Length: 221
Ligand SMILES: CC(C)(COP(=O)(O)OP(=O)(O)OC[C@H]1O[C@@H](n2cnc3c(N)ncnc32)[C@H](O)[C@@H]1OP(=O)(O)O)[C@@H](O)C(=O)NCCC(=O)NCCS
Image (cartoon, rainbow, N blue to C red; front, side, top):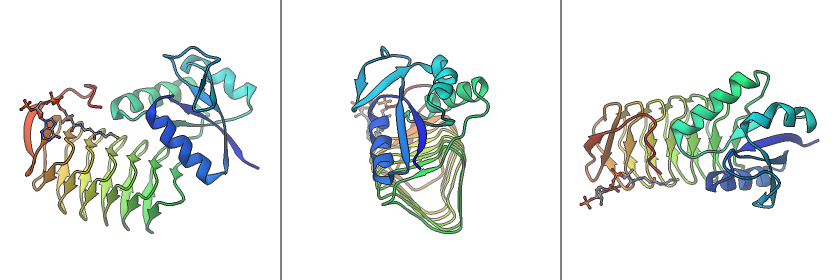
């Protein structure tokens, strides 16, 4: 029987996660949760059931205990996940892997991590909770991604790369082997990262250079 689940978020990334769930076919999505939209409407053909505060009673009403936080921005995804974890401690956070993605063995994936279509995780990799590998992104062998870090579509990482907490690697960027990206750093689209980057900066270009500092919750999408 399909497991029932709520999607937290109702914007573009939620659409991508919904496509993953439809391809898998083993989850039945009860609806979407979004504080910024009126409940009762339809988004992507699914009902918006309410906001975060409604999750406890919705879990009871729909007899479910599984959620995915489908928010693309790393800082916001973590904030929402932590808020929900406090309010509804018995929730489950499945790891969701698109059937077209490849995850080599051995790999360790933290709860709530999402791996979208055609993405690749190399052997020996370790991903914390709430990570996101977007479409066709690749973390090669022995890579590490800390909590709520993300790779945008088409990112290529060489082997033994480390991505810090909430760090976001932008569309199509390339990271050579063994570099590390500090926590809360954003790598701009198309960058080629040849040297490690410190925490809390924005860097872009070829080769990637630090252009400024950034605050942990500063939007970047
Ligand atoms: C880097 C980024 C976060 C923007 O940072 P920002 O500080 O707000 O930058 P701005 O847009 O104000 O641009 C400032 C300057 O940097 C340049 N710039 C911005 N992003 C750049 C990039 N990725 N590569 C090279 N130059 C870039 C701009 O052209 C601008 O140059 P100018 O001053 O000569 O006109 C954004 O451009 C980016 O790359 N985001 C990633 C998006 C992504 O991956 N989306 C996929 C989500 S699934």
